[in-house]
Amino acid sequence: MTAKVLQIIRRAKLPLSKAELAEETGVSLSAISVHVERLLEEKLIEVSKIGVSSGGRKPRQYALNKNIGLILSIELGTSFVHIALTNFNCEILYLTTSDIDITDGPDRVLTRIHELVDQMLLENKVDKVSIKGIGIGIPGPVDFSMGIPISPTIMPGWDKYPIREFWSKYFDCPCYVDNDVNTMALGEHAKGLQFEVSNLIYVKVGSGIGSGIIYDGVLYRGSTGSAGDIGHFDIGSDVVCWCGNKGCLEASAGGKAIVSKGKERALSHRSEYLLQILNSRGKLTIDDIGTGVLQLDSTSVALVRESGTSIGRVIASIVNFANPDLVVIGGRVAEFGDIFLAAIRQSVYQRSLPLATRNLIINKSVLGNMAGLIGGAFMTIDQIIIQSTDNEADIILK
Image 1 (cartoon, one colour):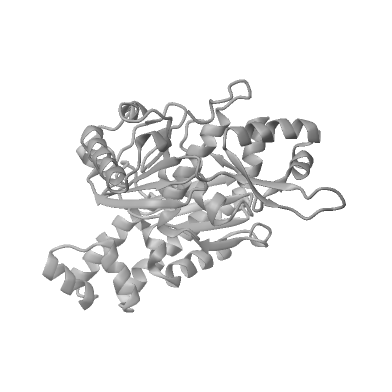
Image 2 (cartoon, helix red, strand yellow):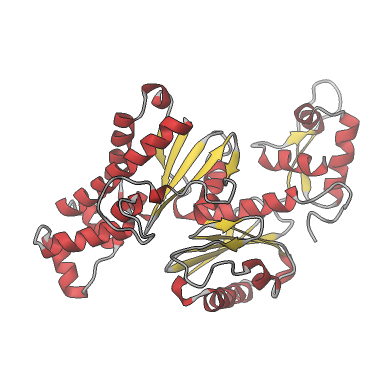
């Protein structure tokens, strides 16, 4: 029950009194007092303010002690890594970014990340002991209970690699590993939306396409951790996907597909803007397409609109099936302005049933490119609390 009380205090928008906690949990005021005093003793919560009296003593109101420790949150992409230290309110205190190549394999990549973490701690004079948990989001399927990647096609050499054990060599704290889109969904739900929406689908559109699902306020991972893998929905095209199948959404509408199409259209002289970049640099990037959208290059605009339309068709099927309150669009391509979002919305509303879209909202991510780091921290703190028990007073934080 102590852990439950902590979760309620942690997720509340405003500080809560003992009476409010008793009402929320359905237990007596005296029982709540025992749990609150224990949390105060462990310094997990603090008196935030004194409330207004209703006739007796003014009630104390309690909030999470966000400075009880730090969380190391890592977001690993195919070509980059973002690393952050957050407090227990998931506020980012320190942040660093570096280029990496995920195909270099886990030993080399994780060793490089560890070097970056050490450098961050040294530069900011942070003691390793203050880190109470590590959360990592990776761009591939994960067995969450084991903390290992499972057959991640774009991560050669990572299959079943013991990521937790790697970090246990350097830090005396728990480590949790999840798919990167799941951590983004958690961050958006908890900190971007402040738990105001119970059913949402977070769609990430970057080099690939994936989604995280919040159902009835809880992240849904599926039986083996692969829930939300919408990038391999068949949209009926002849394009061969890296997975070996034809017609996958990701192969036609993901960031890599957009760049590939951009190169083809540049070489066929349908965009002087893209052709000029291709001739000068020898390649195009997704950021070049984004800049083209901002400069109203007609080919770049068309590429992004086509991607949004295809993604919207798949989201429409999901909306008809799952009936979410909200669809959140995140990832690099989502930052290309309203053209992309408008194409998704139009496609969803055209193809979804009226009842499913009656109250549906489709919005860009509130947290943007920080969703994964914030969500990784939230996931880690959540797991630390969930795995604590009332029988061990110091298990929540070592």
